Amino acid sequence: MLQNYVPILIFLGIGAMVGMGAIAFSRVLAPNKPNLEKGSPYECGFEAFEDSRMKFDVRYYLVAILFIIFDLEIAFLFPWAVVLEEIGMFGFLSMMLFLGILVVGFIYEWVRGALEWE
Amino acid sequence: MELMLSYMQGWPDWIQVTLINVVKIVVILIPLLLAVAYTTYAERKLIGYMQIRIGPNRVGPRGWLQPIADALKLLLKEAAIPTNANRYLFLVAPVISITAALAAWAVIPVSDTLLLTNIDAGLLYILALTSMGVYGVIIAGWASNSKYAFLGAMRSAAQIVAYEIAMGFALVGVLMAAGSLNLGEIVRGQQGSFLDWYVWPLFPLFLVYFISGVAETNRAPFDVAEGESEIVAGFHVEYSGMTFAVFFLAEYANIILISALTAILFLGGWHAPIDTPFTIVPPGLWFIGKAALVLFFFLWFRATFPRYRYDQIMRLGWKVFIPVTLVWIAVLGFFMFFTPLGHMFH
Figure 1: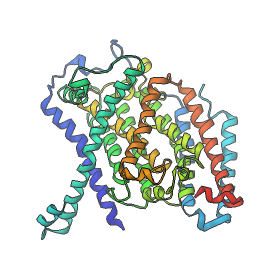
Figure 2: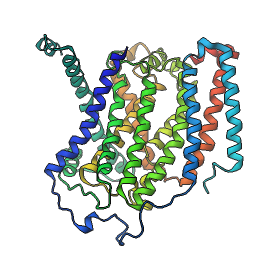
Figure 3: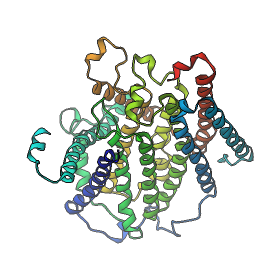
Figure 4: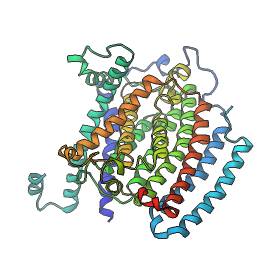
């Protein structure tokens, strides 16, 4: 059973090697002459000012939090969908109850404006 | 393969297994990387024709060698690393992107027998790896220490995360119909004529999945993460030479992956649309043809649609796609359990 996953492990290794190999290979072949101008961050020709790791909009956090809730929901739905035929009507209705509760939360988010981006 | 096996007789088992797998992986990777290279060429050529231009036509006959010239050029260009960047993360980011984009191909069944490994958690593995790809983008934006890169990474992260949910729900619909996470089983569930493909009972989910796929890969019209006219090149603004090329490869490998998955999940994978005359064409070619058709839409979208505004993208993801998929999952279950039409859905 687990033997089927061995090729995946090897593939991940080779995938990483393709990326690293290409970068390393060009490191050897390509010129490498860093200077002050080349090494400064691009800001349309201006001198860079302030730190670029600035404060950002709190809505990005909100999206991340909402994502966790919904992604967990999907994590529940995946195994449920696979065995749906075996668990039958009872399984279907209990998941609908669960989804119903989540939809209430979703409507609350919507009404409170958590999904607005303007 | 036979020759190799006889040559390796007597070697330890794990070396044999590893070497055979390495050969198989290379056999997958070479056509894949060629496909990536020629997708970039097809894109430039197609968009050229759609805009009544010729497109690249200098290198080789009709420009056929253009992607190879591009690759060589990028290989020989200096990959500048910004002074203020976090060097280690800056170089790791493209590698993460390409690893995720390539390794997902381990479970794609080209035909009934033509696949690297047959795992039961195939779809879960794909979902996990495509989610890994976003780390490459975020790390690149953070490590560059540049404002545009940072903005691009933030936008990209929020966008991918929003569409990941819609995509996940769309996949739940496929799972309900197929009853398996194994990609091969999902295709076998669609056996028969083209009327048996999941695209019909799951039509809204098909649309949501495909459009989410376009958004997940940061393609036009959802390419705000690298919107040239607003934030220059977004998360890879500081990347040059081969480090940029690796991101580019990963993006196109992901596009081809989404096309292949759309073909597998909704368009019947390697099955021919009608039985008798069309089964002469080998199943692998049907699969590649379907994936190529979906891929064409990616390029067509780029030539046709203007870029969405960021708030429009988020509204589409959260307020249209998620409700549509939720409702369709309920409708699907309702049909399966409460109506005599149930057999249509599996």
